[in-house]
Image (cartoon, rainbow, N blue to C red; front, side, top):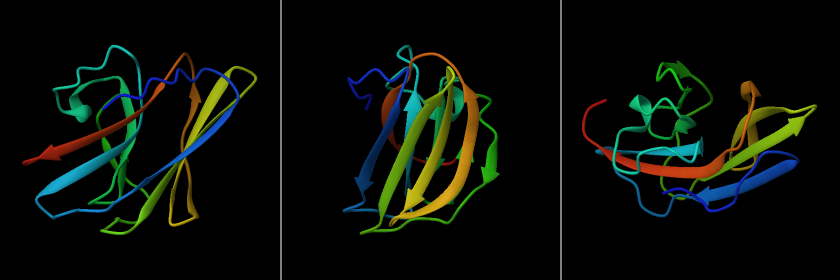
Length: 122
């Protein structure tokens, strides 16, 4: 799912609350470029920067998974912060109000809030 808010400047924060969750799926939360395929794997899209809730990893446009923060479960709230300074964006994630730290920096261009459910092996 791609949000309809174009983000290319300023400071933006939003949250996703996990109401239902199983270990057979993963939830990807983050930002994407407008041209992302809504039917593909976000790791293969080259235009999604995010956090994988089940395994507690981050991934960028290269699709490489990197340990980051902690895994999330049912009833957790995941926060996303995208803020721009001098034309460059910094992306950070939170779990239940605790910041994991900066996930990505030096992001440029316009992004949209993005969430994806994925079933199957990655």
